[in-house]
Length: 112
Image (cartoon, rainbow, N blue to C red; front, side, top):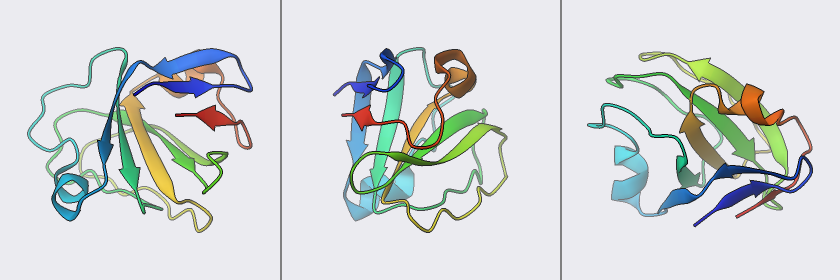
């Protein structure tokens, strides 16, 4: 899948993997040593994340049910917790620096 920020007219990721089962949501990016440019992980039913046992920082874009950005966390390091974004329905995990690079902001429309 691809993730496009339609508001900014820029591609966020062209290789997005869906985590929509209990196991895939729990595993997330655990066990990976990096997230390459163009990769992303879309976690359903998610309004916060943890970085326990992660090996690298990431950016996280929190989306509501209509895929509008309701929360942004840049460069969240290993072993940290994100804030809870009560309006979020899913989280799009991206390589660190992607939010700044794409100028993504609250209320931008994302097309998956």
